[in-house]
Image 1 (tube, one colour):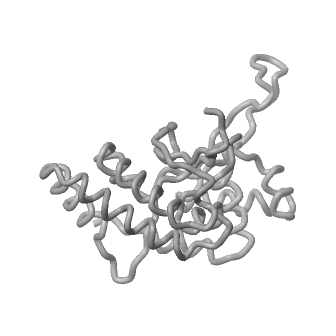
Image 2: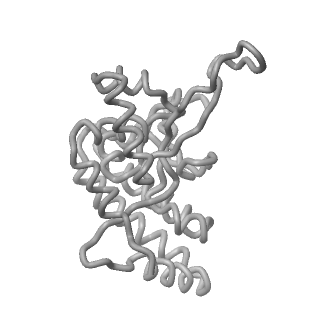
Length: 217
């Protein structure tokens, strides 16, 4: 059996500066370079590079190389080393639990039995319960639930899907559940009446987006 390095990876985030580095890169819409990270976190470039490479070693960040000038060929300069959130997920429990296996089995049964309406009803109730305890800051509430929200014009986009693995294997089922969950959350949240949830998938993001009700769209 291969060792599970999730505990070690998550343990790296205990250090406050390293956690700030990770959160800045993971929450960014595009890859970030060492200079940008250093400026955002308020540390030196060499210290930013140290923390970034530690996070790469742990599988929490991934590296790409790209010329940011858009030029190619002689004189274009060396490609910049850029960092982004890694696709791998890390969940820690001691001793290990296999909740994802149980979730996949339940999703298979629900999908096969045609129980989507019952699932959506349950998801909406769960969303309403969560929304009732939400403060006035909708973005902070969504961030607390793992969505990594950001404003995109008159929309709130969700950079992360908290149900990524299940959504990959059962997209209509889980995306519909997620939509119902966010519908319920908006219905009960203090500032939720300003927004409506809709399916609008983008590569690498959550399948649901929130559209301002004042939008002309």
